Length: 362
View 1: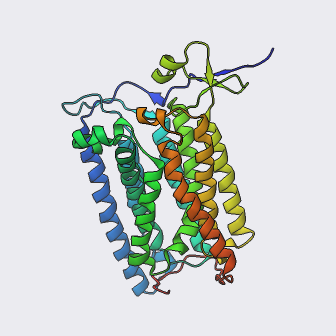
View 2: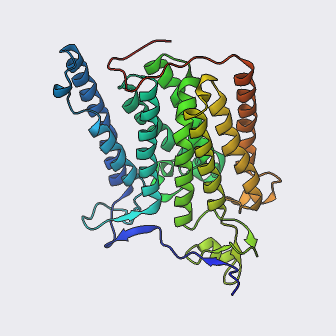
C-alpha cells in the first residue's frame, strides 16, 4: 500500500470537560491581575534576596523567590489563549486546555531553564533571570499582536481598535514578536544588565529558537497556516479547518508547512546550543544572533513560497508580507556574522553558579 496523504484530525483542545464562558473583558482582567501579581512578587523576591544577602547569604536561610513571577506568567499565558464564548460575563464551569497555549507555556518554561543554565555558566547575577522573563513575555505577546494588526489587517483593526486587545480571538505575527523582543532587550540591557544588548541577544536567541518550534507545532494542532496542495506522500488533509474545506476538500492534501518550519527551528536550536556549549561561540558577540536571524527568516522566506497567503491582499504579491519582512532580518544576520568573525574573540568567564549579587559590570 502506498501512503499518499495524512489526514490530520487532531483537535486543538488537549482535554475539554465542557465550555468555559468568559467575556473578553473578564479574560483581560485576569491577564492584568497576573501581570500585577508577577510585578509584586518580583519586587517582594528582590527585597527578600537583598535582605538575605545583607544577613550573610546563608544557604539554609535562603528565601523562596521568583515562584510567583513564574506561576503568574504561566497562568497569564493560559488565560491569553482561552476562547471567549460569552460576550456578557463570566460563567463558572469547566475549561478546555488547548495545544497552542500549552506550547507557549512549555516553551517559556523550557526556555527559562535553558537560559538559566547559560547564565549560571557565566556567573550572571541571579536577579537577571526573572526580570528578563517579564520583559520577554510582555514583548512577545504585545509585539506579535501589534505586528499582526499593523502588517496584515490594519484596515480592519484601524476601524475596530478595541479588537486589537482580543488576542484570544487569534492573530499573532512572528515578525512583530521579534521586533517587540528586540526593543525589550535594549530596554532590559540599559536598565538591568548595563551590558551591550548583544550579550543578551546571543544567549536569548538559543531558547527562542526552541519556542518558535513549539509555536509552529501549536499551529499544526490548530490546523492553520498550511501550504498549497501537493501530491507528495507526506501531504496533510485538514478536515477541521474551514480554509481547507473551502479550498481543497475533499481530495487534495497540502504541504504541512507548520512541520517544515518546526523542523528547521528545532535544528537551529540544536546548532545554536552546540555552538554555545561546545564551540564557545558567545566569545564572538553577534555570531549566535546572526545565525539565528538567518536560520529563522531565510527558512521563513523560502517556505512561504509553498504556504497559503494569510490575508487576501497577499494573493497578488510576488513576495508576500512575511517574506518582505524577513529580508531585513536576513541582511542583519549576514552583517552580524561578518562583524563577529572580523573582530577578535572576547574572553568569557566560566562559573558554575549564578552570582549572589547584582552586577553592573560593563
